[in-house]
Figure 1 (cartoon, rainbow, N blue to C red):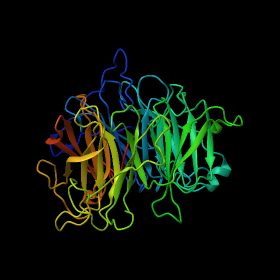
Figure 2: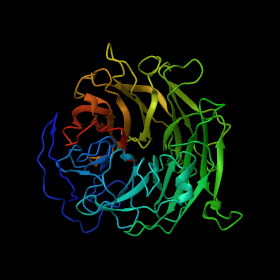
Figure 3: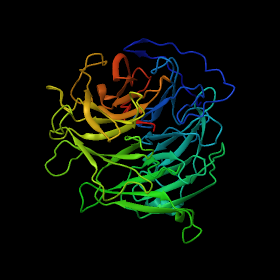
Length: 474
């Protein structure tokens, strides 16, 4: 029988008890990641390796609900494909929860969650992937609907469909849209959606190059989000960065003709995030290039500043690595600095800040223990003054740095306690072989370890390898 689990977990900060569902409000908040409409943002955490019943790596999603004390809160939910109302069945190697994106798809004021199951089998096509919407409501995330599948021909060519998912208003009509990406194809679903998962329309874009990632954000200030894709390229180890911007009036009636592809030929990266770092009203693009070009061994990030026409391909981006003055640490082989990035205003000064994961960082004799670094935005762009690094050996951070923890494998900045300052949730995807997440609150002086909390895979009630914390909903 399918069911949704509400887990009471023992945390490093104390033992929590499950409480009744949050009462319905007169009007939900409408915040992009507020699944239960109570005015506090929530966070969904992927555990694609979780065992469900006897199905290894079937996958699960753990949802933590924000509150005045942040998260982990007294209310959490574990969702699998065996949960009540969720389409499909938990099967071995589905990897449900491999990718996550939040947004209000049906315009009811409650945020919904898009979940990618990277290797879901469809009919006789093995491991092609699927995307499912879990619906928000006054009790949080419950039930779900499958998004329409691409055609049989498309699925036959795709590998890992929905490995990258993102939400945003890509056409500027006020409704939230969804994109799902895998290998050489990407699919666009146009909102609003019905509760059956039916969009206004959907279409595919093909032969763009190999990509499993998508980054969404408004880089032009026109109210329509861009879709940024990092592509693998045989002749360019740093990859190839291109993005779609809304450009109505294409040459035919195909919906995708309303978008123009723009290249950033000098940009490199494997993943990224967007936010207004210099406060000019345009979103900026932060790219993580964790392999590191040339003499760099441990990785870097670059910032491409937005404008009315998007990032100028000829601009000189801000480049930051662990040998940049002011940045803690040293550029070392396989640190993987830039293997996770996110953007948000930690200190409430209206300039977006950047958090960078380096899950291959060695801490003393602990190899690949991992770290995260915080860099602050300003009117002149991203600065290294006041930059700070955090590890599991930092005073006040729960746990201890151990070989293979991979602290900083994922990072997410969002205001979970409604103080106007972004908090940090970071995943240690290999903690104790199963994964964990750590929560640090944002303050006017930056992140604080006071009141820091963590949640392990076991504490969330997950079984198997879990991979808890490999992905956090954007």
